[in-house]
Length: 210
Image 1 (cartoon, helix red, strand yellow):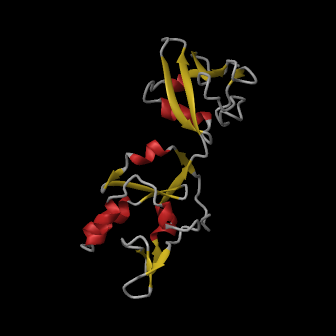
Image 2 (cartoon, rainbow, N blue to C red):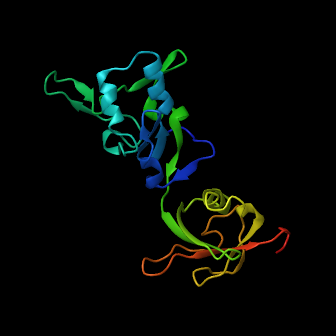
Image 3 (spheres, rainbow, N blue to C red):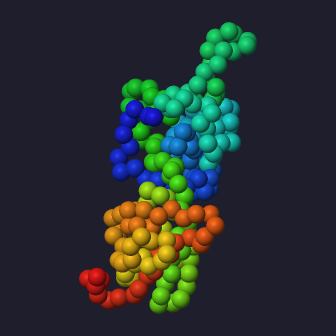
């Protein structure tokens, strides 16, 4: 594990990372850690310090580079057959300048934006006002409030609804605690042979309703 803390750690599914594969929007994964190297790449372009090995790095946008790094996020090395000396397995720029000091970018906390979830969860969100049903994939670590933010692309007014649980996959029925995860709210991980659990949205002008 890395030896620095990531404040307010965010979690991602792998499908959220893979789309960030362009120089102006560039993420990678190393041992479950999600890094946004966009600013690193742009700085190389702006400072005219780009070299041919950076093109190699670009081939890994949105991908997992774990095999090139130890679990402490330091790069692995091998003995060069040409020189007999150790060399870094992943050739592109292994250091970035932070102020006046050098730090390997893989352990530079400014590039770390979160972690890959330990489990992807499918959830059906049912709008009882419109009858629309959306199935979305979220992270096990997501709070209901995080799920609400992900669902906003389908309903920008979802904060005006009461979010409730009431299905056979829930150990307890009732209103959801927005500060709890699905599991903490009693919505347990689903089995592969059943439908995803459901969250029911009830529109109400009075959000104090229990």
